[in-house]
Amino acid sequence: MSDLDFSSTSPQKPLQQPAAPPPPPVYNAAMAMEFFKSAGKPESFEPGATIFKEDDKGGGLFGKSDKMYVLILGEVEMVAQNKVIGSVRAGETFGEMAVIAQAARTATARAKSACTLIGLDDKQFQVALQQKPEFALMLMSIMNTQLRSTISRLNASRALHAGAAKQAVVFDKKLLAGLVKLMAGQEPSRFEAGKMIMQEGTGGAFMYIVLEGKVAISIKGGIVGRAGPGGVFGEMALVDQSVRAATATAETPCALLAINRIAFLQLVKTSPAFGAALLAGLAERAQDMAVRNK
Image (cartoon, rainbow, N blue to C red; front, side, top):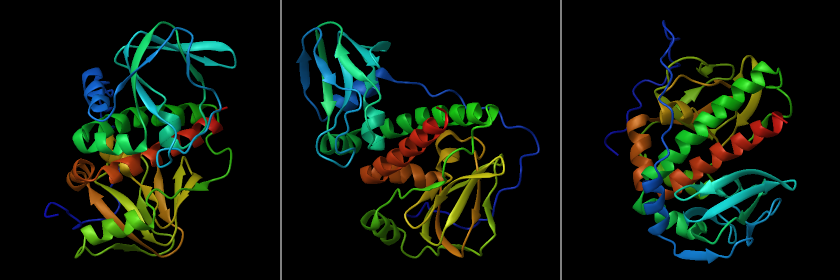
């Protein structure tokens, strides 16, 4: 990829002035409809029919059973612990977070009226991403906003550092090997133990994929996560072009792939697996933060 730029991978200096907040993510119903129609077929549900149940857990994004949906006609109500917590209207998606995060459903989806919707399983989702990769960017932007909001609430309630700091693997060995091959000729960025890689509140020019070693991710001085081989950090600033939400420090000597925004966008557009893996990583992080928020 000729547009990859790894010429400067040192941590960015703090901004001299507060950066303007990024524009709120815009949910594009037309894009969602096109995305789902490109790979799925309409299904009909009678009033009162259950689409999926609270606490159901299927195979996740790379499994065989779960689906995410877009509503074409009718209305779907979301029920948690026997209480209606919201509704889904035509053009809106639902069920995607549990599938992408490979987590249990947090609510039951039930047809409030006669409904027509389209569901995508993992294979159909990958096909749709090939047709409409910009949908992945829209979902990432929405997840980013939700995640930043959750972090802010946790910090205000002093619950940000509750729970164990998990080590998440976003790219499995096959995907990681593919990325290394794709970027053949690009030297990994190397950091000694204790070296700061990126700093909370600074501008973000790169995201990082860990090839070797371990990196600690901290917010407001406390460790909230770790990234080992196959782990990713720094992508939030590339998605919404905002400041870093966290600080990353090498816990051991490490080697990283540094990817700038141009290369990031190109990878999302040309590799559905790359976009899907990043979505899964963001969703897992959001789920972890949501647990801390309870």
